[in-house]
Image (cartoon, rainbow, N blue to C red; front, side, top):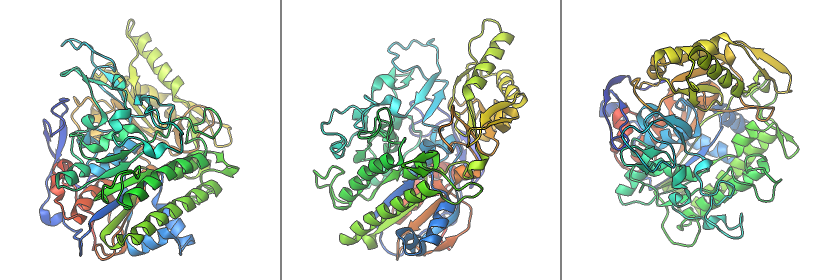
Length: 557
């Protein structure tokens, strides 16, 4: 994993970690001179942060080159474009956004995936917590914790959905079922997403300086970005994307049809426009334009994943990284919606005082559909567990948690090096048969993996002590194009360490405050967080992850 600095030592805790007892990494602290490149030339009062999930740097370059009069071309031409930017590993949405709003990688933030595992916590629903209670549980901060995952309002009970969705509560925690949350053994209470985060966020820093904040995302679980205090975001808007898509085929959620995803994203765009107009997301209360606000788009991500939708072929043209028909339409949609936000800023005289930052929580792999191999990981996990129980009579399952998208990550009931090596050896010595983009069978050696880090090696990979209860016990890098999924559904995924998962844009548009140009320095999306604070005239060192990792502001030469 790329780091700006090397680990210097390990700390017992930072704020937010003590309550859950999690050690975190500590990094060398560079000089102030080495981190203050991004100094605004005039006051920036607002920052609009946009994550276009799935967007690659190559997508941005392709679109600007082929649409020179577009909104994206305007922003790229007038902004600082960091063309060599990477997300953290794992390249999942949860650590991807966490990086942008904290300045930290998973070792520091404690956030590895939206669906992960923790060896020190108790199962959801636990109400009795004796000292000898068995520990270890899935930590799922996705739609499964909603009060009603099937409804776009996550169980608030709004009438007239989906048209009334903008009336959704501004407090994401009101939509979360506490019985679905992991339990802290020390307090015997559920752990909300914001409490699981080990360091503070830009939203908390901005709020502590007397300014207001807003954020919109795809699950109520993004309560996470409010930070350990839970007070960072004044105005949350978190309609559930994996709910039943009203007006579309029964059983489909908003990600199963790209037109549905666009409709869903448009609700969040309207929320942002309402905030630009000085209201809260519902347009019912005058709140003032937030100092930091924004949203994520899902339209590009579903256009990359779906084989087809709305009569258009998804993904990229075979043998290339050129967007196909569905993805081209999705990029046009993003361009138009960004233009609408930019126009609204101009209409209110806010263009000169608002910085627009565009990046992505993650990319997607593979881009070339010819490289795709879909492998069902279920039979592999079952076979490993069966082999373990055969070798250890009376033992239970060895693999007890993990999410495999285009990486392999396993959490084990036995955390010994012997057990971790058992999984590694099995993975590397057994072939796996999957299917290609056209459904043809394809067999790959080593379970579709090129490298596996087990036990101590996995801890070293993530720069954490072996005792850390959050990191995967076994972490595997896939062969290019491998996606662990059943059937013949998706044609791309994210979550791994592939460059196509990680190579995303960072575009900072702030005329008069940031010098435009294309910058090739290797940077990370963690650098967005301190840059936002610097643009607002606030101290990047107010972020705990910035102090721990020595995260620099983005360079502007």
